[in-house]
Length: 238
Image (cartoon, rainbow, N blue to C red; front, side):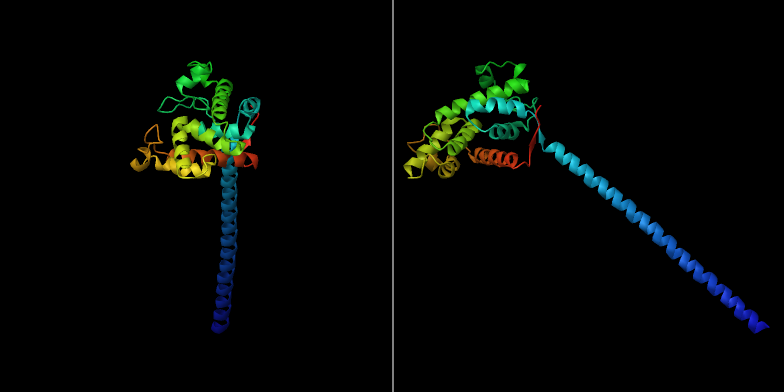
């Protein structure tokens, strides 16, 4: 009797232990699965938010204005838009520490030259139109650069740095038998204008200049232009 009772009691405890283990495993799996599912949902939500944010960041306004005024320069509208993006990320209220304002970051003298005042300089349409006119003036100044794509690079450099230092870098390029009408051959001499051995050269008229920012600017505008053309930056028709 004692042996039989002991056997049954042991068997009963074994079954209870087995059921507890199995039940615990099931609960653990369910909780783990729920946790994984919940984690997956959170991850999906984060990714979705990142996509929305990226789309918002890469969605650029004022396409209508860039298309309207690009013919003033004789450029594709995407290149004009790239200038605005590089200048201000297309923020109409943008102001620089140096006094430039609006989408195209016009200096006060330039803004006044094209009919803008302290108020209208912050109007996107007016600002973009004036920026296009300013670029058109520079485009005419570099008329001797026959290749339009190359000329655009010189115009961009002058828009950023002013014409004077670009002319000096061209003069140096000519002196050292580089092609003064090819930006990639002129660009190194713009960098050299910070070196006294070059800015004191007799062909240099406007003195020393730190050209690194201008060189990066031209590259940045070109990069943004290609992204717009490839559809990687979306321009809204606002």
